[in-house]
Amino acid sequence: MKSKTTGKLTFFIILALIVALTFAAFFGIESYYGDTRKVYIKGAEDIRWGIDIRGGVEAVFSPDKADIDITKEDMDAAKAIIETRLVNNNITDYEVYNDNTNHQIIVRFPWAAEESDFDAAAAVQELGETALLKFCKNEDSKDIILSGSEDIESAQAGLDENGNSVVYLYFTKAGTAKFSSATAQLVGQQISIWMDEEMLSAPTVQQAINQNNAYITGMANPQEAKELADKINAGSLPFALTVDDSKLQVISPTLGEDALNVMVLAGSVAFALVCLLMILRYRLNGVVAAIALLGQLAGSIACISGFFPGANSFTLTIPGIAGIILSVGVGVDCNVIAAERIRDEFTKGKTIDGAIDSGYKNSLNAIIDGNVTIVIVSVVLMGAFGTPDSLIAKLFSPVMSLFGSQVTGSIYSFGYTLLIGTIFNLIMGVFASKKMLKSISRLKLFRNPWFYGGKKNA
Image (cartoon, rainbow, N blue to C red; front, side, top):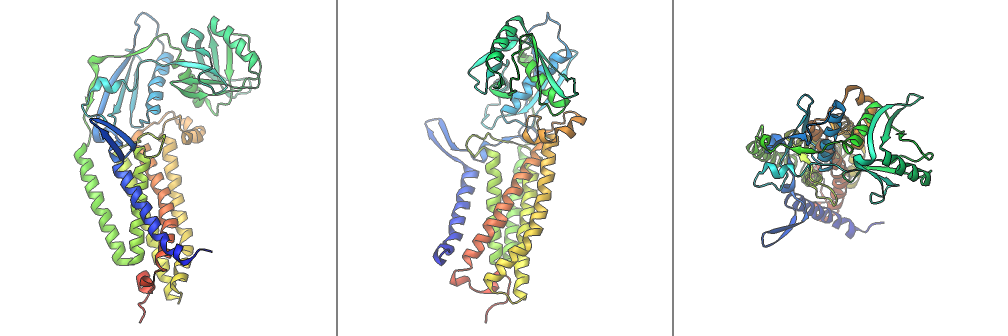
């Protein structure tokens, strides 16, 4: 059983944690040694803004050889190189087009967060110009069996004798000898496939393979098989990709940073007004709701900025900002429902403690139903318009493969921010709000039903 002293302190502990999260999420934690900046925790300034807000770069990638026969499949595989690198850099707001007639790949992507001199040539270096494909023992990327075009001739998506989607592999003479030796030693173990230090697949060796071809099983559908085949081909192309510097262009933002500043200002004013109205309407419940909403907003910014260790900055577009604002609106609705239920309980003659407990209990179903619905919508948007490599996209691949690739960064950004905002709403609007309200209600100063929507004690 918790003591009253511990209960009273809960409000201040949660408040301190929310304030600390808010400060760190918005401003980050960093230090300077001369002109060298060392970032310990990323803040809002480390967010990578989308092309619509900050602009970006348009680059044209071309094969470095003109005297070879380049097929459409080669171009698709080369496109997979670029898309994989964009995904690896957590750049979701991008456009990639193939010009098969002229053997060119046109790529548009936003500036990096730290970009200050807007050097298009330097920005393209982030994507690189070559790709290394390798087959390794188990999941150890350093224990290489085969690598590059010297060992892997090609890969092709297809169907096996049972109609299941597979990827057929074809090896060079040197690759055949190496693969035969490796599979003889690794029966029952895995051979992992890597490109750009990202593991594409890790099939289990069923038997020793002594021929110049093999196939990978476990593909959910033909689209997934094609994507894996394209990525394998991307690392075994007979050419490297180079950038035509003469065709580098700086893309102006469609809306611009002024639009961002206006949206941030409008959002800040709206947030302050909503909190003020909540306090005027629901008194102490409104104060707690405002604190919870601040925590929800800070949590959303933290998930976008790369605040958490090992996470890169998420590419944030205008629709992504709209997702944050919408999730805050859902958070307001959550707190309003709880406050109204608490007020109703006072009309039934409940005490302060009884009204708070019953109010949150009776509002929980409505809050959960509304939030779960939004979570489902967000996940569907991310699955339908996200990158094919993402876990959510793979879950929806049996359905979405019927429509082909639909990567749209701005819609994916909207779904992502709406999802994380809703998750933090459940954490802050249900768990944290209830704990703070129950804690502060134990203070003698606030032992009056009027603070919670009831009638004032005589």
